Image 1 (cartoon, rainbow, N blue to C red):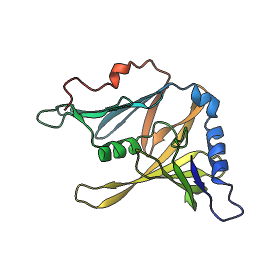
Image 2: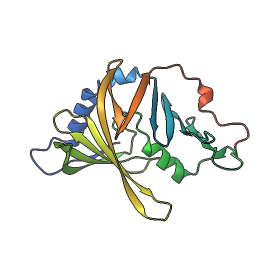
Image 3: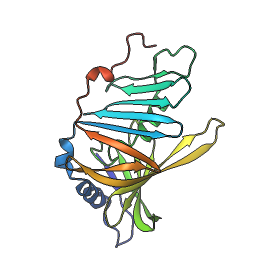
Length: 222
């Protein structure tokens, strides 16, 4: 079951009401059920990326550097096995991902709202109010199996997810808070999707044809 923990303020709607209104704001559960694939592309000063998702839980990401050798890191999950190929290594051998690495990778992706299709056992907690871009937002904490904890900011008026945050471990061993603003919501095939992450514009394609082979691990997987 989904554990929902609301705040104590009488002016605060129950957490399940915030979730319901959020899903309605981004197009509604019925329209999102028709979304079978998503493709997200973007570029930064350091490189370009492509993220793809296919119902129910297959994911693949490609991060390619700009210039130089054009090295690429490919990471994917076929519903059973998570694997990666790191083009920055001298011998880029496909490898299985360890659970901790897989959890961090899955948590950082912004493909669909974290509040869609919450699995049983998820814990969603109201943390209070905050201000994002000058507007009041509900702040939530979400814990679910297979992912790191993520904090979510839902705009109190639009009920759109406007910011999310997670903790990551820096290479020098220090925990760091990574905050991701979600901006420029646009309608694509009847659902609302952010078209900008922080300062990075995104190109979104809904229900593109995606071969299952994209997600399957290579035969020489270690």
